[in-house]
Each structure stands twice: as structure tokens, then as C-alpha cells.
Image (cartoon, rainbow, N blue to C red; front, side, top):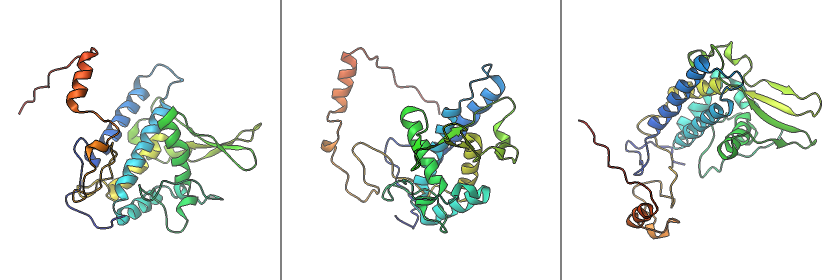
Length: 262
């Protein structure tokens, strides 16, 4: 992975700068969270999974962006540890981590990345939430299970207080089921996002000099100087004209392009 920063990060056409994406996640989370805290009339609805998915999306965006610079990734981990060192608790054995060719999660140098709690949280929570809207239960070697459980929005729990000591009283605590012996690690999405956002700003990750490897079909090269993959190799093997004609032929309304004001 490159360790030097380019002052012209490559943001492929059709993509948004990482700092803007990070702001979207935080702003959407904050407005929706506070609205549910103040307006929701359903006591059993706290948006637990929805907000957890947003928080882990922020973690992945930050990690993918910071992975472009080993120095920024190290600083991100250090600041996150300053906020709560338990994110990097050493586990008894290795857990799955992202391929280093794609990105790396923040980790502390004193413990192997494969044994740090944050890696397990990402694997158990992020993937399950992104695919089927629930965390993934993990089978342990004693035939018991480990899984995360999320808190949600509630009356008075506004985002401005998410970093307080009172709000983190449950965060990263755990429970053990009295019958089945299942271990539940409690994750408070508001506290998690507040911690990640705080560490990312101090690192700083979302500057104008860093950009992640964006996702694309077909997969693009990471630099402007590298040859572009021919469009003929795209899994979407049709032209824009063919696409427009197909949509029109099947009843999709073509809307006028919105006018912009100076």
C-alpha cells in the first residue's frame, strides 16, 4: 500500500469524494437518530440495526481511505484507542480480516490485527447487516455462540451526548445467556460512530489528499496513470444508448434534467 500522499487523489467519474461521503453518513445518522429520540411514538422501534449499519459503513469508509497511507491508519487507530482501548482487546484466536490488498482495519501494533476485537466486530456486524440486515452469529469451539447486539435511539438520547461517559456505560459490555450460554457483546451505534468520527477527524483521514480504492464494474485501476480496463470487459455488456432504449421501451419514464441556478 502506498505511504506517500498525492495532492491530487484519483476520484473516478461517478464517485463522490470520501470527505463528502463521510459527512453524508454522519449527518444522515445524526438527523435520523435525533428525530427518533424526539418523535418516535413506538417504544419498541429504535432503529438498532439501521444505525449499526451506518456506523459500520463509516468504519469501512474510514478504513479504506486511511489504508492509502500507513501513517494515517496508524494515527486513526491510536486516536480510537485513546477514546476506548477496548476496541483492540486481544482475542484468544485469530478472526477473519479484510484482504490487505483491499484495505486494512485500524489496529494497534502490540497485537496481531487478526486478534483484535475491532476485526471481529467488523466481520460479525458489518457483513451481516449489509447483506441480510442482521448480525452474524459465530459458532465457537465449545458449541456455544458469540454475537453482537445493538442498542438504539430512545427518548433523550441525543447524538450530542453520544461521547459522554454515561452513554458508553453499556458500550462493549457483554451478557451471557443463562440457558444456552450464548455470549452477547453490546454495541451502541451512537457511541461507536461518535468514537470513529472523533478519531477520523484527528487523524485526519478525510483530507483532500486521500481517496480510497473505489468500487466499480469492471474494476478500475487505482491511479490515473494506470491503463483503464477496456469497457468491452464490463459485465454490463451494452451501450448507454441500448440502456436508454430498453428503459423507454418498458415503460420507464425519462425525466427532464433538473435546471441548476447560479
